[in-house]
Amino acid sequence: MTLKRILSALALLLTPALAFAHPGHDDNGLIAGISHPLGGLDHLLAMLAVGLWAAQQKGAARWALPCTFVGTMLIGGLLGFEGLNLPALENGIAASVLALGLAVALAVRPPLGMAVAVTALFALLHGVAHGLELPEMSSPWTYATGFVSATAVLHAAGYALVRALPQAAAPLVRLAGAASAATGVWLLAG
Image (cartoon, rainbow, N blue to C red; front, side):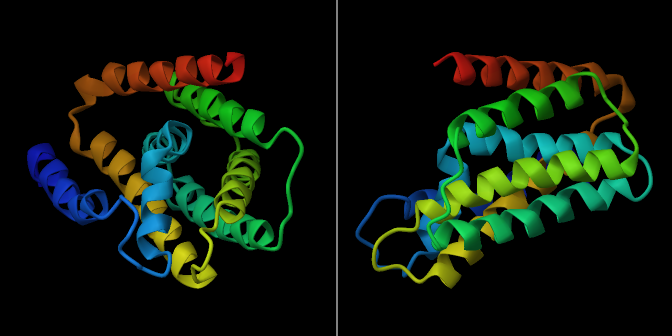
């Protein structure tokens, strides 16, 4: 499958979410859940970076990192639904953009346990933030379905991008990681 076809398919999958991203569709939270990770630069960059980083790994880390992120983010979302608010949550999310961007930029391959632990920590922060922003009158389950689905698509997009590119394009992926890390610094400073 060519990169052009992958990107075209992703664009088609995400188009309905963008069309319904404005309020007034009475979707019980599904569209709000989908648009939350897509609409926030911090969430978007971190979730793409997880996919990019996973594709740079070998063995079990290729699937363990995205699966860990999605599962732990869902747990964080459930905690957020219950009102758990972590101190410095926004700074932690900005730090995730910085750290995951650096991991991609440097093509870091830590031991699996360490990579999973770091991924889980960042996923928990993103999940709590999603949970705290549950729209009023929305079903938490449909909202969670939305943000979990959008996150999985972003991970898959990052992963597919790296895997579809020729090896010679690896510096471009690293450059994307560096840009994400720089954005994380900007978010922390702001």
